[in-house]
Image (cartoon, rainbow over all chains, first blue to last red; front, side, top):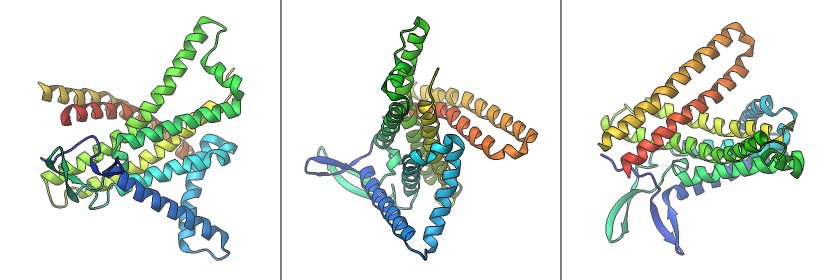
Length: 245
Length: 70
């Protein structure tokens, strides 16, 4: 059986800071993400634009109209956050499927034992990444709530002393904000990590060609999860900025 | 004993979300048959609802994986 570990492995230490294999891939993804964004910005200034711009513009427009159906006129304000989530998660998921990711092994010494660990690991197959994404999402939802309802209206949603039932409902609201973090992070982590385990086990059982349909399934799952994460953030934002009575 | 626990976690955890996803899908198809113009909004709502139902199965899967590999 191939060895599967839930936590990312430490490849080396940089000034006492452990560098894990998922961090390595995430760095590459962030660089490519920044490169695409910069290229798109440069092209949008030119009069004669190339095919790359039009292809990317088409995608952005399709996603924009999708969020427009949830948020309406306010999509303009929230779109940068939502689209960053979408693109980042999509790139992370798809980069984890490239050949060589998870299959290139290197040797490290840990506690004077020789271990073989993969050099790269999909960024979202690491609970730390998805947990951070979930925290960013939930914190931004709170910030938008304060911005649109005012601090008083925001607090009134959680601490309401008018009658006992409303007080109890406020406690449930606070709990639901924390469970959002857990459900966001576990959904993304579970889907991507399960996909990696599935691909590993199928490749172990039947070495040739059998994992091909599963890779297509994983490409689809990666897209759907990126869409679901950003879409849920959009739905929660639209709930947080709507005033309650 | 541990294997039984893992298998039961996964089996029970997959059973009910599967039922839920089937119900969501059948209801969405029903709505689509009645009102074919609303395809895009029905599809979005369906995918969101499926993601919620599926999350439960994913929790079971994460628990099972943690039991198995640690």
